[in-house]
Length: 279
Image (tube, rainbow, N blue to C red; front, side, top):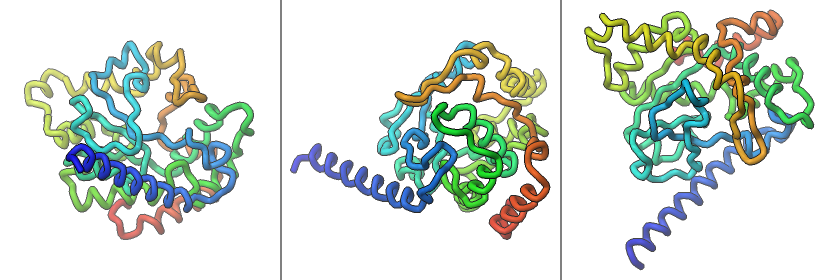
């Protein structure tokens, strides 16, 4: 067997093992109504993505500037540099080519109550018309049961948090609420983690403030490109760009959820995250 044939056999074995592990995970998802109609819709699984060029977000919607990579990605070095990957997958489903590559990870998590409300609002806007809107009570029950597009919220967070605890130089954990309240602090933290800290001169010249202002929700959501047009998620689904920007507020769940709902989610969070150091 030639070297090329050997490599091809190993690649096929790797893909077969990856698919097997992925299918095993799918079997743990309850076969019932979910966020996007039936849970077993391939279009609801967003694979890792990468961007090989600077992001001119003023002229183009950010999602149009990235290329989708199939789940079975094996060789990161084959992708153009610099390589920026993004995913909704839990850490346990990431291919070894990503987790063992020496890459740095930035994980952003948010108050689960606001996650629920945001996801509920989003899916009702983007679901096909033939799928009846999901009610808030049903969305709440699904979320609390751990029935979400990429697995239970709390398990998802804990999976990445474990890696952060074990390898802090590999994983940066950011919280959405902290980014909203102290964007300058969090931006500096990100720059340090990526090995490109701001110089004293840059800080003196207000570079940090300018980046925060330019990348703010208020600025990006008001760009014309983000208010018009649509993004083709797959062959059958296109989402209007404006739906990717809603309010970006902290604590909006208080408007939609009852006190009983909020208390229930808080109890689950306390139970799941107890002893983790996250709360």
